[in-house]
Image (cartoon, rainbow, N blue to C red; front, top):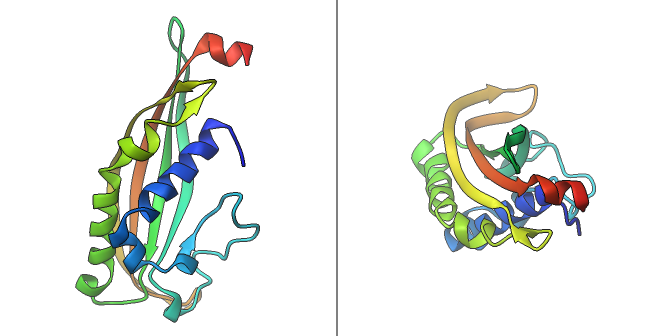
Amino acid sequence: MSTDPFSKVYDGLWEMLENHSGFADKVKIGNRQKFNGSMRSPKSLKAVLTADRPVVGLVVIGAVPQLHRASNLVTIHEQYEFVIITGERRVTESLYPVSWEMVKAMTKWKTYLSSLTWNSKTFVHLAHAIGFTESLVDDDTHSIRGWVGRWQYEVQMHFKETDMQTV
């Protein structure tokens, strides 16, 4: 198990979703595409059968680091994207129910993320959705049909510069 803050946040985001019963009821365990230590070669989000949907994956999309934000503060705003592939054209039967359960799970970020520690100190100061896009896809090349949703999510991490230099 990794002990770096990035891995802890990634795992915490999954824990936040999976411990929400509404999400767990709508997305089968095998349809949760994790790109972490628990899975050596996860399937591509595109390479799943229609019967294996909805599929939800969590991908890292980048970060905004400020390595000297203040006299002794380093901040990193890591951004993630939860991708929902439904395999279904009826938005009210596929994308919206899963999205709603994810929104409800995201409101519990303090429970799962604010207690994470690095160097014996908590480091997550804020986590929030920063956008959501949805599209109706009909892609024969990748066998993706139906609604695809993308939740952009940001986690703001703060560290003391002196801790980063001594650990």
